[in-house]
Image (tube, rainbow, N blue to C red):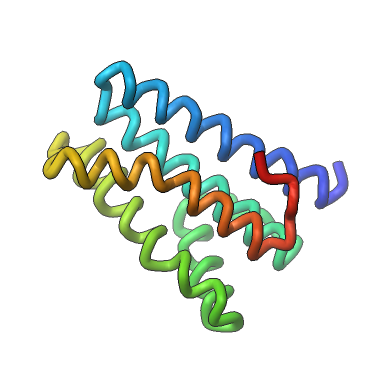
Amino acid sequence: MVATDRISATFADARAVHADALRLLEAGDIRDAAEKAWCATKRATDALILARTSTEPEFSPDTTRGLVRLAAADSAVNSLVGRYYSRQGHLHGTCFYLGDCEPVAEVHRRIRQTADYINDAERLAGYSNSA
């Protein structure tokens, strides 16, 4: 599979996982929705890193380091860094792992706005096949 196919597939995966997050949120499963939104964030970030470096991160720490390196090299990527850490810490760590999903409105907002993160990652990747 050529890199562009892999980028496309990874962004598509991010969108599918985010759709699952929204479905779970509507069903009232905020904890699993939070984890899915985090996973969608990570996949979109993986796709961005792949598009910019031709290397797909294997593990979460690789994704984090890759995003920070991209931001250091391109200030436009800085807009993703805080949003990435917000989802990693609040959605993945606090809500999913610890079960503390308060304040609920804030968790809902982060889950829903993951679509914006994916869109921005696609734009920064130069990938224009947004859903």
